[in-house]
Length: 90
Image (cartoon, rainbow, N blue to C red; front, side, top):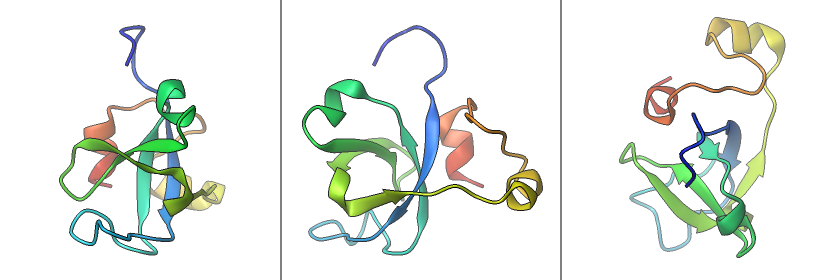
């Protein structure tokens, strides 16, 4: 990943956890970190149950947008630019 500042984070929901049941929970919301190099290989960089970011098949996830009231309750802003480890604990 580049050293140009904080990574851009988005929310995704897990729809499949084949071969990764200890790391991913189906129907759970995760933080995904933008990684163009991984995306070129149909992979997504996700902060999983370990609290670390790992690459998983992009088909395991679907992007989601939370309603503004939920974002406020979780103190999230559009284009979330917080540290990924902190986001994983929300």
